[in-house]
Image (cartoon, rainbow, N blue to C red; front, side):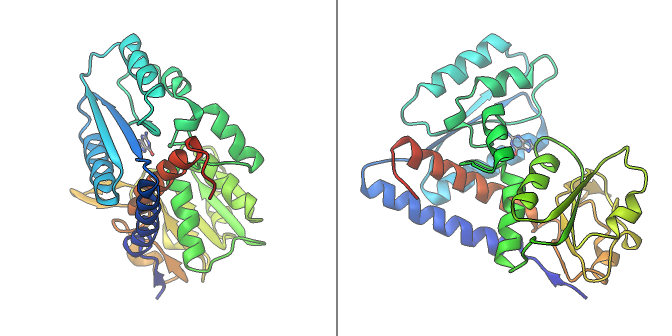
Length: 284
Ligand code: GUN
């Protein structure tokens, strides 16, 4: 039976620190502002955006939501981003993905000022993560690292296996583990001997997007298992890991819900505070 890594507890600790930081800036007459753009009616995106707004309100961060219709043109969206890039009271800009098919995500992400790109999706921020000199880290991998730190799990010298190579999770996750001196393998849909590679993992991160993808026979006894998945099975939210079976083998495991999910929003709040500090030339 493994230890449950509780994302609700750890995210609350992160958010409490952010709230302190926001209050400190307020004393200096500086407010912290986040603009969230959502285009279209994707139900999951709507829930994520509502949760981000709620978190801002709880921490004293001013949030502005821009809910645009499905038929918004690229020119209209670029004009909004330009306006927010130049708005003094907005420190962070987030454009919820996925965008409707007719909009080019790359063009939109590239148009956000890197110093306001609290998602860390802009190529300038991605490049900084490669080098290991960064202000913003994509929120989900940053949340995973925070969980490991909180639990005293040091990746140094450990075999770390990440399943999934997305720009948002898999690739930056691998980089962050590498920066902490883990020995990192990134697996994906074309990986041939996936089970054998997973069995070598001291730290296994699943970011696949398929329910029950990671089964107990893929997990080494005593491994730390981090489940980034957010799937639905029989109408219920579940991750990528067969939790009930894997928890008997792992030394520590994150649940879904209540694991990585709450961390993602907490790290977004942290990135927004960092953006406000940097834009006001405040260190720390
Ligand atoms: N869609 C799914 N995850 C994310 C995220 O972290 N940021 C944004 N902007 N869109 C997402």
